[in-house]
Amino acid sequence: MNTNQSEKAFSLGALFETANNQRHKLDTLTEPSSTAYQENLHAAIVAFQECRQLTERLAIFSPNETEDDISSGDLQYLLTNYYLGELLRQDCVTSRKIVLQQAQIAYERYLKLLDTYDMLSRADSKLYQRYLSSRDDFSLLSVTDPTARRNTKIARYKQEQELKLKLRYLAQVPLALQNDDAASREIYLAEIQLCIHNTFHALDVIGQEVQIIALMPLTSPAAQSEEPEQDQRQRSGIRKDDYSDRLDPPISHLLKNGKAGPILSKDGKPLKPFTLLNSRQRLQDGVFKPDHALPTMTIDEYLEEEKRRGGIIDGGGQTRGGPQEADEDDLEKADMDTMKAREWDEYVEAHPKGSGNTLNRG
Image 1: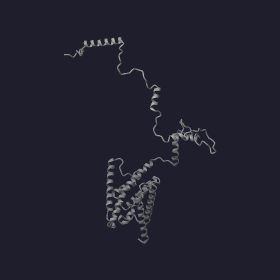
Image 2: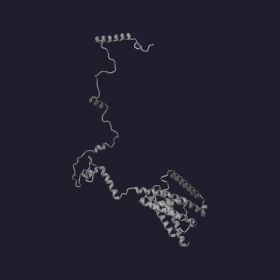
Image 3: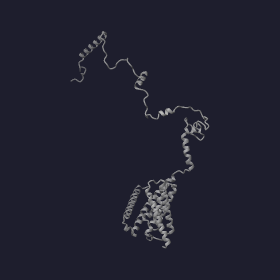
Image 4: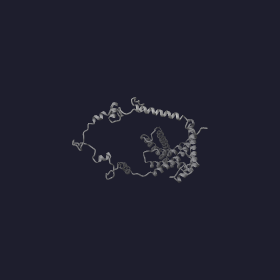
C-alpha cells in the first residue's frame, strides 16, 4: 500500500469513526420525531453513505478474496450497510415507502457482501436464498403452522441472547488484549453475526409494513384538502346549491348570507338594524358570583306562596287517629252504646272461648 492509499485508508477510518459517533449521539436524544433528532440522523446517514462510497473507491472488499484475506481493521467496514439500513428506518421526514425501499436495499447489500465472503452460516444462507426468491412475501415465521411459528420464535430468541452474551463478554476483555489482532477480530466477527440476525428480522418487519402501505387507499393532496370542506358541509346539511335541510342553519352559513358581520360601515353608517342593550352591568354583576344557583326567596315567602296556591290547609277538618269525646247530653246515643255493650256480653257468655272448635276433640 503506497502513501496515497494509506492516507485514504486513514481518511476512511476517521470518517467511519465520525459516522459511529453521530450514530451513538442519537442514543442521547429521547424524541425520534424532534427536529434535533432528525438533523443528527440525517448527518449520520450522510456520513455512512460517504463511508460506503469511499470503501468502494478504495476497493477494500473484493469478490476474489475470502474472510481470512480481510484484515482485522477492515472487518468493521462490513457493517456500513447494516448501520445505514438501521438509520434509514428511523427517518420520519421522507415518504415512508421510499424510506423502507432504501433501508431494504442497504440490508440486501450487507447480506450480499457477507455471502460473497461465505460469512453466512448454513441456516442464514438458507434464509438469504429464501429471501431472494420471495422478497415481497418474506417472513421468518410460519403463517400456517402455529407450532413451527412458536419454535422459530424460541430458537431465534435463544440465538439472539447467545450472540449478545458473547459480544458482551468479548467487550469486557482488558485493554491489553484488545490490542491483540486476534481478540479484536473475534469481537468484530461476533458483532457481524448479531447484525445478521437483526437484518433478517428487519427485512421481515419491512415486508409487513410494505404490505400494510400497499393496502392503504391512495389520496392526492387535492382530495385531502377537499375532504375537510366536504365533511363540514355534510355536517351542516348544506348541498352544493347552498340548500340546507336544517331548520337552524349554522353560523358559517349565516355569515355567508350576510346575517352576521359588521354593524357599521367605515363611514359610520349602519349596515343593518340593531338594538342597544345595557348588558354591561349584567355581565359585570355575573363575574363574582358562586357557580351554583342562589335562592330567590326566603322560607317565609315560600310558605306564603304555598298557602296562596292551596298547598297548606290551615284549620278545619277532623282530627284523625285520636279518640272522640262523648256527649253527655245525648241520651239516645248513650242508650244505644249501652244496648250494644249488653248484646256483646250476652254473646260472649253464650259462646265461651273454644266452643266453636268441636271437630278435633277426642
